Length: 156
Picture 1 (cartoon, rainbow, N blue to C red):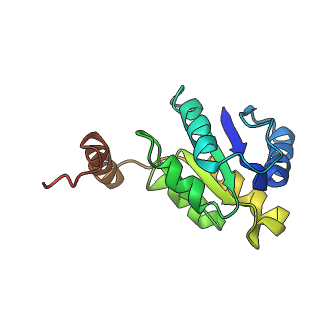
Picture 2 (spheres, one colour):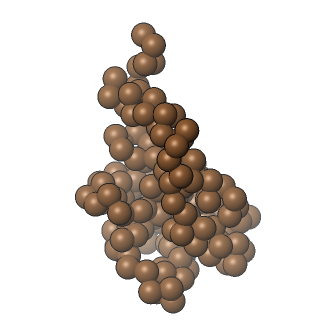
């Protein structure tokens, strides 16, 4: 299932993506269908999205704020989340293949957001992607080790 949410800046982009999900018969859950006003902070939205993503290993998330950067930072504070801001299909594909990203972050106030086709291509590349494992697993193990140690370097 795709867990999708946005702060108030991303409501229109979120609706656009939901239409794409519907057309492609992709199951989704909008965890922020209530937000339309200033005052819904992206860290709170990130927390809601990520907690829902972590409920099932097959879940993926789409998180939207003004730039995609703030919400990605907040998402990546949650143990088990690997969030990636992607601005093209290649980044979306590689975030899944190399990094096993489970949350796609997008910016609603960016130039990219004005291009419906590019946004849909990025979303599709992310959702269709898969983790290649192999040499990438070693790197993810190191990330997990950093998480376990509370952000401290795994060498110290």
